[in-house]
Image (cartoon, rainbow, N blue to C red; front, side, top):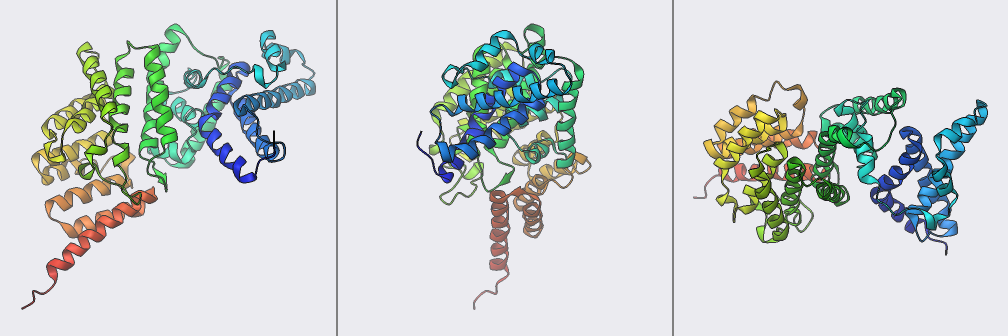
Length: 431
């Protein structure tokens, strides 16, 4: 293997950390069952790659190389611990005989199976609460940072860091194997798995921080895993609904940004740029699923997305139907973000004053305290109501509170645009 430049290796490792790290972790966890130790071993394998690949060249099969190095790291760790405690038998009990043979094989012998979906189910461990399992899985499978996960849960970053740390400790202390469930155990984890995939996709489609508007690595992986899950359990109506929702939402991706990478809101998007094949697939999927009468939140959200996607123009959107669907969704999932979206739909049907009244109902919800999206929605509704000064103040406050640079720029542009309108109105008439 010819040596590679540091820049080339760095770019490759960044790509592999997004695309391959969950698969590598899945393989290692299946073998050794200790999540925290396996996660450390995978991180050490990436560090080793950063040090060795510029000198020795990048391997033909980077995934296999990382698996082999991570395996060696964790077996060395286990053996050192066993020697220190004079319990060599521990190593034998941790590593089944057939997997000891696999460890001795060279990189060409490493399986190419994609273990990411297995890792997803394994991370939704019965020793954890659903919230802790989702947080841990978003970190392990989605590769999301603690800050990103905290924003998804509407909690401080320090709180989320403690939750993830406690989750790892709980798994270790539980004595329950970190392994792929089957039968009833698998079914019991399915709801948590669906939520992880939904949050992964949501963060990828609308990044909550940084300069990127869309993280296709994250949304694309969530969509891929959901397709795989649907192929394995096609009878699950909510998995089908989740896949339809992702397809119908991702179909608009190309129109979400302008020529300079700026955010383009839904009502201003060029609908000819929407992916009609994805829309057709999503509509067909949700149309086939809803009649089964196993209705759940993801199916309702997919139905809302379908109403948006099937409108030829923004003015053709069937807002009364969307509002009715949000009312149904609220009865299933009393979520503050759902309430916020219902406020927007109410404004589109009954007028901005009615929407603002709905939004005021969220003022006492501690989960949304200081959240920029409340101010952004209020600004939009105030603008529709003709209160430009109030809208400008809310746009600016929302811009101060968001962690997304793209969103901040968009909100400040809206405030500036309204400021220009007010200046033009107050300018003296020539005469």
